Image 1 (cartoon, rainbow, N blue to C red):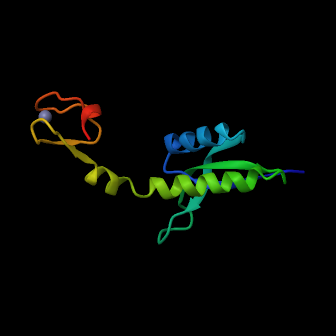
Image 2 (spheres, rainbow, N blue to C red; image 1 turned 120 degrees about the vertical axis):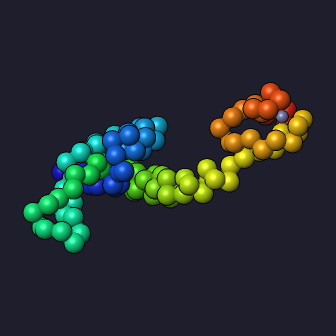
Length: 117
Ligand SMILES: [Zn+2]
């Protein structure tokens, strides 16, 4: 009998759904549970925090191992978003302005980023 195993503890429902989408691309069915009880550190034991987590079936078919790999990759990437955001800029070749990563054209002169080197 296959058992459900937790592969990832999410920051929230949105985070969990992104990972489930990645798993589905690989043909792995994932279950999202929002009722994972985690005892709060340093507080009363009667207090628990509700965490969203992602679970998959440990089916001995290699999918569980693959799911763990995907979850590890996803966790590694999601742990460094601040660094990526702060350094993600490109310089406009037309006017020299520094433009943030999310813009596809220069905010100053309108030059398309696609034409930048
Ligand atoms: Zn420009």
